[in-house]
Figure 1 (tube, one colour):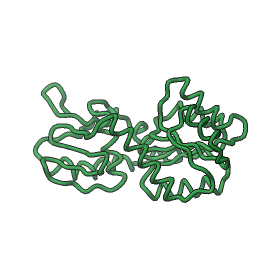
Figure 2 (figure 1 turned 90 degrees about the vertical axis):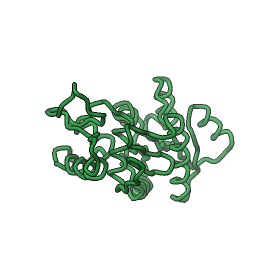
Figure 3 (figure 1 turned 180 degrees about the vertical axis):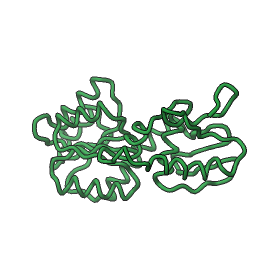
Figure 4 (figure 1 turned 30 degrees about the vertical axis):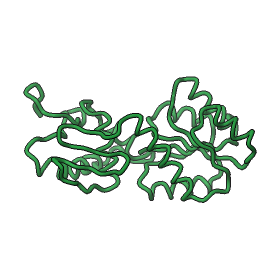
Length: 229
């Protein structure tokens, strides 16, 4: 999962980023509304964490612009104001939740998990291809009924492939979703993780699902006569 934190208080932003990365999320941080709008339109985020009071374009304006453009990415507002009117305004603009500063980091994580579960249940209860299954609610992965243990990055990588099964994903697309904007896309880390994932979901089984699209990237699909690696 890739999250965008829009927060101009550097200590708060750093605390959130560090904590969420420790939970296995890829996290980008932006400190102003103008750049936040551009980032949210450019990259495919799973959730936005938006401070209401931002320099220039405020958080409400950022979210309204996104919703007006039919962007339904889940969003949590952060604010020091705790009035009922303030919360109603934010929710009516399209926010999924509202958290008042100061807050406990554990509560933020719980709210993120709850929102992502709701959105994942809309997309699919389970993700599957052939005999490979991933349950977004429990993070359980199985192939041919056998449980497969994955690291956080391996899980994020497989989830991204399953949501885009049959589609060729370039290394840049993978980096932008599974890692963050500061990641060096010229390293071979993506290929290393692809090999790790293959060793777990493909190597022990006869039918291979994760294929190389030579010169382009990788694709998760059932192999057939028309597609040879």
